[in-house]
Amino acid sequence: MMNQIASLQDTLKSLRLGETADQISNLLEQAEKNDETYAAFLMNVMSFEQRRREEKKIERHFKWATFPFNKTLEQFDLTEQQSLSKKQFNQLKELLWIEQLYNLILLGPPGVGKTHLAVGLGIKAIYRGYKVIFSSMGELIHTLKTEEITRKSQTRMKRIRNADLVIIDDLMFMAMNQNEANLFFHLINELYNNASIILTSNKAPKEWGELLGDPAITTAILDRIMHRAEIIHLNEDSYRMKHRTSIFE
Ligand code: ADP
Ligand code: MG
Image (cartoon, rainbow, N blue to C red; front, side, top):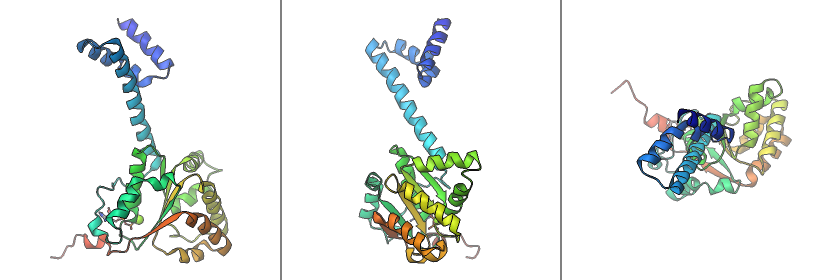
C-alpha cells in the first residue's frame, strides 16, 4: 500500500498534478470512508486539483501585485466620500472597465482615499482572475531605468507588461528628466490596448506637463491615457485628517 501510494504520487507529479499528489492519501481515505463511487471519487480528485490551482494562482497574483496595504472595497466608506456616488462605485466594482480597457484617473489631495480605492479595485480584480501590478511612480521609473541592469527589474517589467491592470500611484510626484519621460511614454504605449491603468495623482492632468518636462511627450502620454478614461475627483475633506487621533481632548 505504501509503495503503491508512493509510485502513484510519482505518476501524479509527472502528470503535473502536484496538489493531488500531496493530498492523495487523504483523498483516498475520504473516498473509502464515504464509500464513494468511482465516478464521484474521480470527480472529487479533479475538482480538488482545480480548486487548489485556482487558489495558488490567486496567491501568486497577490505576491506579484505588491500592494502597499490590503484594504478592500468593503472597507471603503462611501459616506465619507461624497464625490463618488453609490452607483458609480458599484459600476467600478463590476470591473467591466477592465474588460473594455478603460483607464481610471483618481485625483484629489492627500488622504482622500485614492490609494485605498485603487488597491480595493486591484484586490477585487485579482479575485476575478486578472493580473494586477501596483507600483508607485517612483518605483516604476526606477524599475524602467534598471531593466537592462538587474534581473529583478527585468522580471518586474515583464509582469507589468503582462498585467491586465497596472496601478501607478502618485503620478508626477517627482519631476522627471527627458530619459525618464521617454521610458514612461514607451511603457504607456505598450500598455495602451493591452491593459487598464489606474493613475492616482494630487495634481490635475493639466499640471502634469511641467513635471514631465517635455510638452510633446506629455501630450502623447495624455493622448493615450485619456483616449478611454474615467476621471474621478476625490475631494472630500481628508479622511486621514478627520479620523486622526489627537493627543488633545
Ligand atoms: P490618498 O492615496 O488619497 O492619499 P489613502 O488611500 O492612502 O489616501 O487614504 C488615507 C487613509 O485613509 C487610509 O488609511 C485609507 O484606508 C483611509 N481612507 C481614506 N478614504 C477612506 C474611505 N472613504 N473609507 C475608509 N477609509 C478611507
Ligand atoms: Mg496615496
